[in-house]
Amino acid sequence: GDSKGKGWGKAWGIQNLFGKGFGGDFGKGKGKGKRKTDPEKTAWIGGLPENEASVERNKALVEHLKQAGECKFVKIGKTGTGCAAFTTADEVATAIATLNGSVFQGVAIQVDVWTKKEEA
Image 1 (cartoon, rainbow, N blue to C red):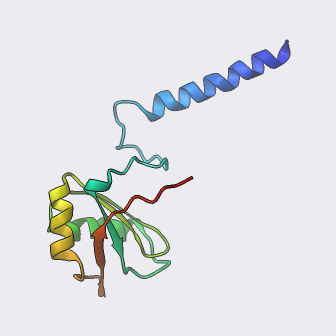
Image 2 (image 1 turned 45 degrees about the horizontal axis):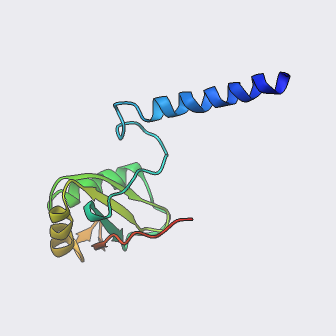
């Protein structure tokens, strides 16, 4: 029964991963896992230059969006689009109302409602 031992090892590895991943510090880690985005508290961001994604730009964008409320984090991909998470749905509405079309680093950005795309 060698295979049984191996199977258990794998199961344990997975347990450990989940144990760490879902600890008390959830959200603070640098995990690449998909964070559960709450559509009501998330704004869609677009209009940024493609292939210029950087941590620096994301941080600067967080500061820009803080004009509307408590922006927790921004994730912009290579396509120049992404999302921004706020603490309340009201802040998202404010961000859309006040910052859609605002100029960030020389480009007019789009801020819109986050419509949940169903991912298979």
